[in-house]
Length: 79
Image 1 (tube, rainbow, N blue to C red):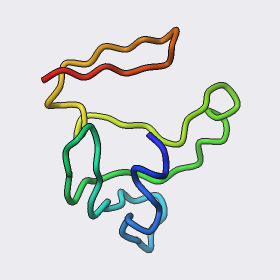
Image 2: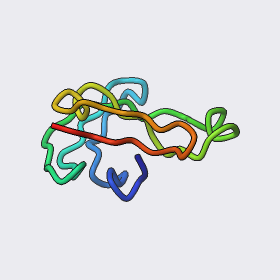
Image 3: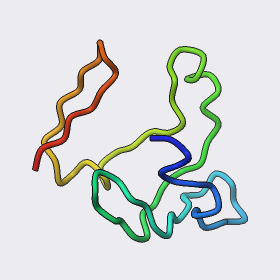
Image 4: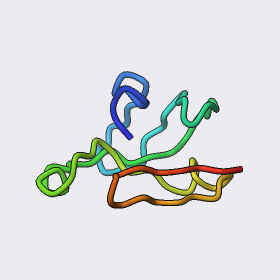
């Protein structure tokens, strides 16, 4: 997931940088999600190995059957 999908200005701020943050609105896989909880963290060590801007999980993937194509770095979603 890249910052175009979840721009920093769309993420609610918290005084505690380690605390979960609120993403007010997010478009993903043709759906709009509101008030998703996430964590903003430094991914620089992960970026040394992979091209990645973020990590997605249960809140976005729970409605899909997911198939990961690791070779071509693709994620296929089916409902």
